[in-house]
Image 1 (cartoon, helix red, strand yellow):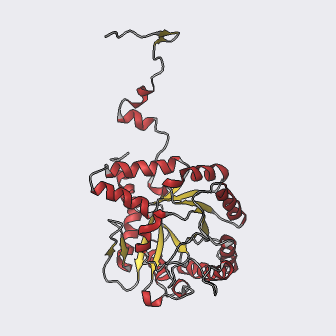
Image 2 (cartoon, one colour):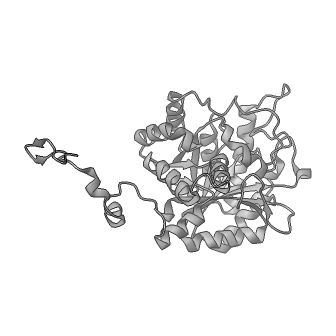
Image 3 (cartoon, one colour):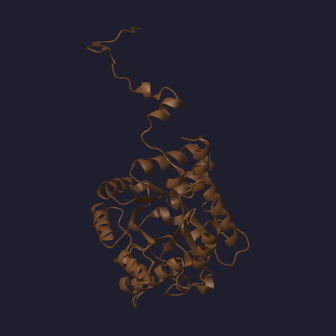
Length: 341
């Protein structure tokens, strides 16, 4: 078999050999275009009212509904790993849910209690974010107030969001995540915060939140009461330009940061939004993305650790400066040790 090659003005073909930059781990690290850092990771965490021990989630192996005490410990562990932030979701007792989501605006509701717990534990060493949405707190499971015909009433919901913004800020949230996809939610939250002198509290706008099948396991995590779907307010997965319209509106209303959710099925949207704005851009690696990796790994079909790093790197590469992921603390620990990626 001949080993001769056609020649070029630069020598034997192929003259250009990209593989030279892949020869060993040190070289690959040196020329890596995309890097993950613990400070870019945000840990979503659920805290349940009235539980005496953490409750494992069947659809999200390794994730729990925390007690107040275990949530404090998880926050400290995140700080020690260098994680950038924690996003809190409160799960009230079923008997306390009602049509308007009263636990979400009760100063003693589980989310507000958890915010105070975490802030007292970690102070400003970890950015504490809160979910500004009604779905965990309503007996119908929708993200807003329903009208007489059972439709989500946008403007009545905004009044509830304004109250939520005030109580979450008072409870210690550094950042409010406006996740309900109501028209005008960012502007209303900003006005509510400014009205009580809390110009220091930031808003993370869920700018492009799609009506996705990948939210399934999250419904267990927050003990959702939802019947039906959220297609009248979350975005249609078929639409891309619509996300840019939502971006323009959120920025005009005062969003400090913007987000795409889910992450992996919408990397194209993430790239477009990152290219269009100069505010920080986040992406949420949602429950279904987490669970499908864990399930496939449990069956021996994929390498779990490599798949985790590959998915997170793809989200970072597509333009996210921050990533919400249930693996945040674990991955931060890997990065600190330098034993992955």
